[in-house]
Length: 335
Image (cartoon, rainbow, N blue to C red; front, side, top):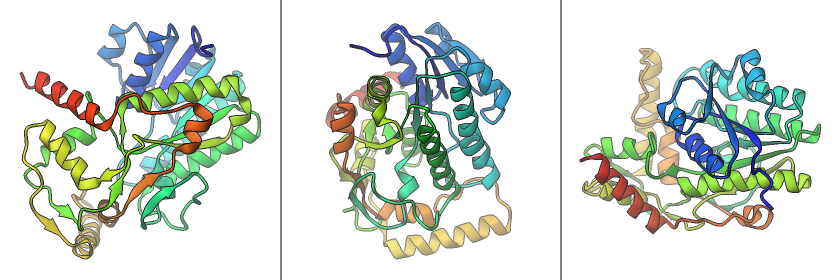
């Protein structure tokens, strides 16, 4: 039985890449969907989605958005590798606490919180890592630190009675991507492979990421004992990072990355870049940081057996199929 059919559901960040994919799936299930975002989106309007605009760090606005909802998908967050801590703390920590408080106040039946595997990244290889991995003693950038704090807030709320599940998708990509894919394509000529290129990573195609979120919502209502659990979700087929980059370049009709630098050199460049950007208060994001140097040269793939067992998750679209769909989408949008 579909536990969320005809339910009233709020998606924070409903106009974003993942948020919109979730909204679209919910509409297909006959749900009454409301979106909470900073902006108004024509794509949501066309689907007949009610839109509430506001700052996720504003408790009153969040409270009014969640009032009357049965289920909440908290997808909205500030991502990135650069900027002031406060700029990440407000949306990722205060915003999450506001969502939690409103869910408790209004008796929401289920909260699905979108997190990130970066919350357990300690700068070393993660190979077959499962949900027992601890948070690191030190975070290399503000995004994973604030997302880790947010996870802990959700876990605490779950212990106090709010039915909640936390998902950790890694490197979401696919048609309509407004972050990863366009970033790779726009930097095609300047891209340089960092390291030996053998490090394996997990990714997740957008359809699969949205599907996992829907499954989490269905399961938290059907099986409240799952509350407080964290799940890695992915394509379940790790791939060398730079092979994936080259596959994405190929979908855009571009040449593969041909130049490379050693991991040690990249780390030094990242260190110098951070120093220069901080010294001269440059607001734009450095092309390379210590965090990115580590991300580019270490393995990040995860054991998703818990998501398979508890949520019934398995990818609906393979990486090969997803790349073909991405290539077709890019081609159609270049006409």
